[in-house]
Length: 148
Image (cartoon, rainbow, N blue to C red):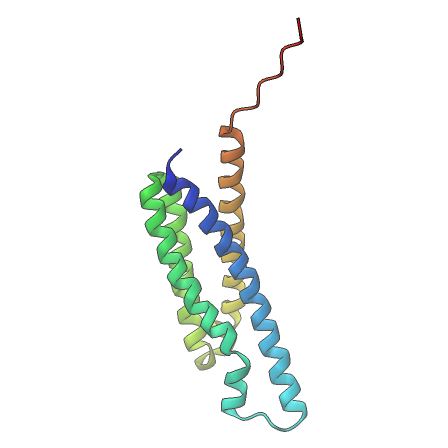
């Protein structure tokens, strides 16, 4: 088996998990900011600090998407390359939506979480396919011959 395919399979699984955690960080940031607003201690820095884990992990996920694309090239699967490229494009778009969402919240801010779920769906689909292909490619253990 190609080592790149194995690494690709594990990496796409890790990416899928990271996006789930990223969505959780967004919720945490929103509720933390709401709690600070209730206490009248919410300023711009305090609001931004609520979303620091979300922003940091988001940047790492985009870098991970680039690595996924490079791994897909090593795995030499045309379908893998296309899907990894699509993931990377969506991740770059997600980063741009996050950076510019405040300038047009009803358009860019609205699209940011929608795009997150599209990314999660695509990564989840790739992960499922990779593990399914691996399972189908693994030889079944031979049945033991009855004792003579």
